[in-house]
Length: 342
Image 1 (cartoon, rainbow, N blue to C red):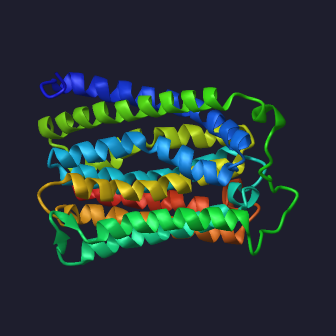
Image 2: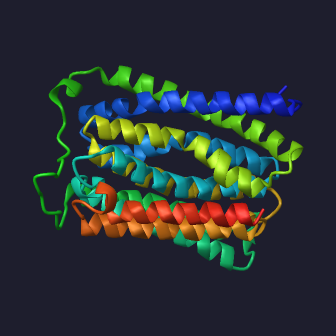
């Protein structure tokens, strides 16, 4: 049924999946915050692992499904385009948080080391694009390194949270991650059950979204890279947007920032999963320069974000941080380059 859908049906399914992903994301922020309090994980780790992984499910399913179908461009452009737009969402959350610059108030050693991990993951992708097509079977040699780097990076995040060697200075605007007593009394089994249901919903929507996106690409004049970076990447990133804004409104600022950075670090694994699923050789060498451009732009936006987390400007232009203003400009530049090149 999904393989033979018309273009009109594809657009309707695309819109429905966007709505489902968005609604599931609204519930996810509060649920992950409660699980973080109930288990003692803390917002930074829970945001990176639980919220980051779950909000990325739809994008992961879409990229892997596209790779299995042989559409390397859609698979990779969705992955790297998602990283850029999700970083932009932190600027949106900064606008929503009016008391101070979000990166100032959400100062956390966990968020900063996660940002460094994300930069390392993005660098691995750029290395893979530039390297020869060295493969074992059809899998590029960088793919297992990308996976190992992520696992080791999460271990460093956990160790740094448990035994910090330095901490950011607290100000009157700093929001400290402290568990709420009411959340600790909730049933952990019930929280986990609800979490798994939301994860399954988001993952299923991602699969249907990939099918509809493939039809849109094949039946229109739109390029796969344009659909991936500007359409599917934005839609599959909706959970990050709604959970980030919801977390900010709930006062869970560390969770808001860590969910984006942690989700972006997990999103780099879309490339690894897609390389394994792509049976025609290295997926890194089957994509256009547009994908490489968005990877580099995502790394640049992450670097700006890290500078904002370290500088901790309390108020900047337009009552947001300089890093948020810069990320908005950089993303607009990326959109302009892609649209002009089509």
